[in-house]
Length: 258
Image (cartoon, rainbow, N blue to C red; front, side, top):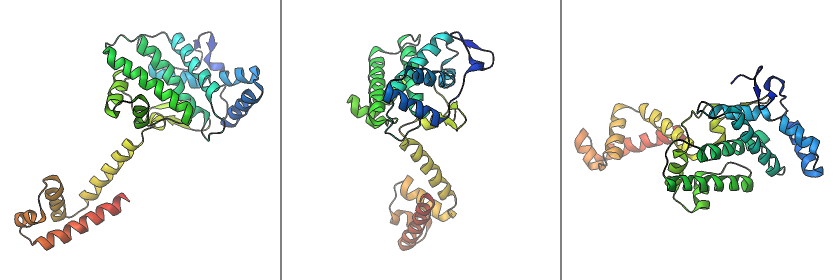
């Protein structure tokens, strides 16, 4: 979706302004302290480009762009109304999941993809719980926190949410302004999975740096589940040598991960 000379909901996107983060915070203070309608309108208009950035992820499904834009603005307004100035978080970081939530709720309610009623209900509860936790924590909640709030298993929450979502790249940009770029990965609350994935890659790389005999010992011990004595018999060295080589290999792997 190009911004130049595109009219959405009667708005010429080429004329949209982008506020600096300091300007957003000042307007939010005016809104909270004085209830200024002028500041509220300026903040909404100054974030319409953010709404446009987010709805790009939801186009191409036969939905009317004007409708998506208006729904995204509803999410923006909710973010403005519920933003907590006492929390150290950028408004854009807080705003994106609120806009995304409104759009997903709309697409879920009018989706042509057949998803079981129970799955849709669980996904709806999870989204409600997520939005509640965002307001409470002023950050993206983890999947575990959402599951605890709903009272369901983590795996069931993940499956339910995935059933109403389209797969996208973690590195897809969702918004860019004069400050920096927000990526999908920045909006993920459950960062433990990403960290575990990175640790796994680091461990694999560390193992690849071991000598052939050490790699074989690690494989036999931890992949095949053999005892040190069984490993010693298989490769033709003493159990004491196996123990020493294993300890050295594990020490090198740990030092790579740390």
